[in-house]
Amino acid sequence: MSTDRRKFLRTLAGAIGLAGGAPFYATAGGQRFLDVLQRQQGASARQLAGDESFWRQVKLAYSVSPSILNLNNGGVSPQPVVVQEAVERYNRMSNELPTFYMWRVLDKGREPLRSKLATLAGCSPDEIAINRNASEALETVIFGLQLKAGDEVVLTRQDYPNMINAWKQRAHRDGIVLKWLSFDFPIEDDGAIVEAFTSAFTPRTKVVHITHVINWNGQVLPARKIALEARRRGIEALVDGAHSFCQLDFEISGLECDYFGTSLHKWLCAPFGSGMLYVRQEKIAALYPLFGAPEPESGDIRKFENLGTRSFAIEQAIGQAIDFHLMIGTNRKQERLQYLKNYWVRQAEKIPGFQLHSPSSPPHGCGIALFSLQEVGNQELSEWLFRNHQIHTVSIEWEKISGIRVTPNVYTLTEDLDRLVHALQDYVENRR
Image 1 (tube, one colour):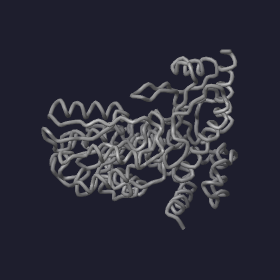
Image 2: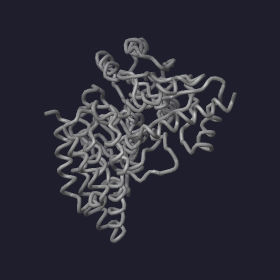
Image 3: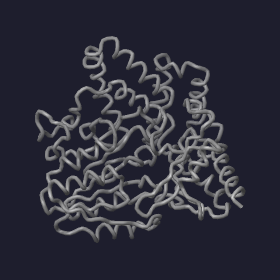
Image 4: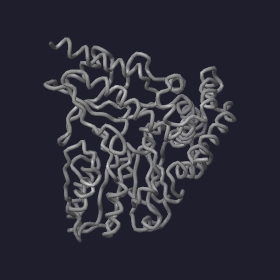
């Protein structure tokens, strides 16, 4: 039995047992959701990818707008109802007696939560810190590494702006040298990508910054291959996993990186403002925390959690998000998101002027797709889609990447994507 399958069965059993504590599972919709999970527990991810009846029940576990079609889940994903209920429950508890329930009750749940995250991530709990988003996790590393003037960092122009700005600030403040790569995506050749990175490595290179999934267009970089090449040269690897964690089926330990940061409010569908930092065990002591800690050179991962007062409701409800995610299964989610992208893109490719700017399939592509229509402004079209068809997308203009990004999620149905395709057809026909 696969690890993912064992996780699914344990989580499903736990969810049924906790139905009284999670009001959604006690509703008719919640019972139907649990029933369909039980009926389909033997089905493979590939079999379920196109099963609309299954995914319709998943959609009913969310409270998304029935009128506005959200195709910008890559920004922030909505939470399933059970996660929303947990946030509200923990928040009400906190407000009854804040300093007691927050610090003496809910704060005690961090260690079990750390273990759940570590199991999901495929690493040791002693390598996981809980924080608020990918930017905070990655900037903990960027500002915590003991670099000096002249040390080199390899990164790309297509990385996320917050990370680019953090590295620029580090260069300005400490005199480190940033060595920039710039790609013409999409690229479906791992060797070419790895070669571009390794060609930039020199004896002075100390760190390579790898964006696992380029958020702009869904390009998947061969993070493991790059990290292994870096390690052979004594270079540390930092992976931005904001769009890979819980969208792609992998374990952090399998990436062979030294540091990894992600937002949990994206593809895990955890509460807004929740994130996670991974630091390889032997790297913890030398990495300084972003916020002051009693022992900054300690080898304890918890030194990265000195945030002061935080929302314990948000933090503890991450556990319900993990349970919900595992009930579906990471592999099932990955297959479904790829299926959805292929479903709408294959139809849209028949529209005059349609251009896809994302890799078409794994291992180079994922569920994120970027497209454009020839001789049509991206912002203009994105606004038109919302104004005329209530379809929410995002226009992208960033470092040789231009288009409209479409990011469905597990609650998105094929009929929703038919609506997008019909809207694009409507736009093209009315322009003639």
